[in-house]
Image (cartoon, rainbow, N blue to C red; front, side, top):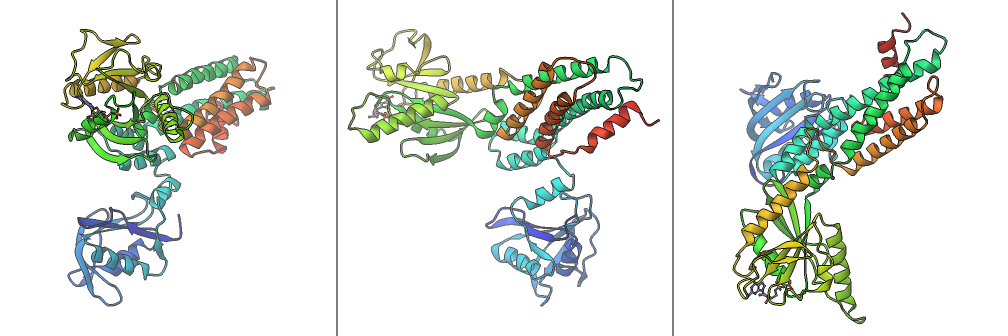
Length: 456
Ligand code: GDP
């Protein structure tokens, strides 16, 4: 347990009905008694019970607020340490009064970002994936993001990796028994069995990695690029989408001058729609526009989905640069349908086109439905009841694990397990352990003894 006691405002800054100040560490109890009083005496807090208390400045006894205090003795707290919570009225002077009073106490200091969660991890309250799930839950803007984050916070992903790691450690233990005790009378077929376990695990891992990046996509939001020739109505379409109040989460300007983004919540999925520079062929001297077009293309290529917008009046002699980007992962949109009638079944490059008017709003609902449909298709193509990995960090460690398992399997069966093969399994287990943050070599010994009872 840490010797330092930390404190911080746990709720958001600004004025609000209530604000929560959290204190964690050995001095938490002292902080609570110093500041909180009931009936003119020091408050006697019962574990995990909210107590109404006067909150006083300890040196002057001046009243700061009338609030609640909650006492969470270790280890039954968020951090696993002694924790005191002050539930205050959410005004700036109340909050600063309490924070200043805590700052004046010996052994207390302001927490650094994420320090409470870090202590929770260090005290074994949660693994690293759960800590990440907590961060994602706080960031979640849509219901699908919230669900994913909550599952991760509740340990689904961590349990999956820990289960895999245990399987690996068991295989390793069997193999190591073969190395260290080759003269002993070990059960037959152990190596064959270990090898089969590893092959099964490698298959599970490969399936988990081949998930169409659904977890990462959901966490970061689906990227949709609006592309098309100049004046096709791309900006007008973005404005139409931005005006759908029900769908909007927030509207922000992109980091580059030529990419404007709108954030939407489509059926629970977070979507970022970017309007890009019009695609056309430009001359040598039009450097700025050429750069805009280069970025638009790059953005379009990176996007999960492209909305290719054409002007219904100049269609089908549509711009070749845009046509080239129309494939199965694009939705073709023919705009300005208020001006000219369209053929019965319009299509470009074999992709059926949706007719809209960005001016009147005609066809926008159908377009949004088509987009939502594509997104749920992307999500369910790989849908499995298993939790999805949500970060590059997970993917990299899993790739490393898989590579090590691949090396192990490629080495082929032999008699006993050669040291190198065991090392590959060890590396694979360590890669998994890094994801959850519990790399611990002693585990291997533990499994050996549990599985084989060698000492007798
Ligand atoms: P962008 O260059 O592709 O972003 O195109 P804009 O959105 O700036 O639109 C180009 C011009 O077409 C503007 O004058 C718009 O008012 C007009 N426009 C856009 N959408 C429509 C539409 O659906 N119907 C009509 N009649 N005009 C439109």
